[in-house]
Every structure is written in C-alpha cells, then in structure tokens.
Picture 1 (cartoon, one colour):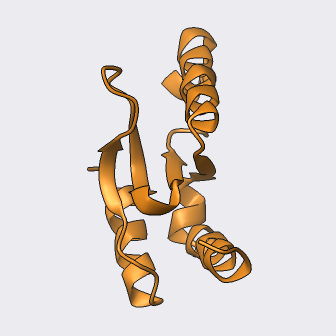
Picture 2: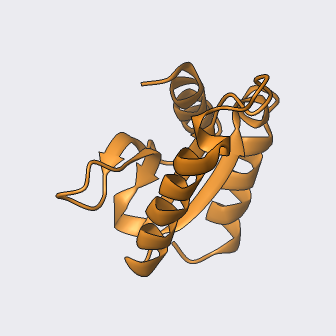
Length: 108
C-alpha cells in the first residue's frame, strides 16, 4: 500500500466516511487494483503519484498512460465511478474533501 493510500484511508475514517478497501482487485483475471474502493457503492479513488517527476512517471508516459486509460475505461464499463487525485491532493486535504462531497451529494 502506498503512503498516499494509507494517508487517505485514515483521513476518510477521521472525517466519518466509511472505511475503504485498499488495493481492491476489480476486474479478474486482470491484475488491476484500485488504490481505495467502496465496492458496494462502485466508488473508487486512484492516487496518481510522480506527476512532477522530471521526464514524467509511468502514468504520464506512452504505454503507462495508455494502460491507465484502458483500466479506467474498463472500470466505467463495469459501473465504477473513479476519482483520480494526486499525492499533493491527498496531502493538502482536497482528496478527502472531494470524497466527502461525493458521499454527501449522491445516493450511495
């Protein structure tokens, strides 16, 4: 589990949101996992790290970006809503704020 996922999981619990499942495999036999997920509600959160690395990260270059697009498209086809955030958004509280808004503003 990444530090960002651990931090966001703790933030969710601290603000009263249901505890998410960490590293949920959502499309067997594919090995795709969501960083955090609320399976019964088909809500997931993906934390995109390394966005400011010189030369980019796996997620922002060629094949890695295309693989992520395939993963998110398959998630949507299976009825999942996926919130994508950066590590900075977890650190400064924006990520948990978005999750609070999702939980309060929808019929989960």
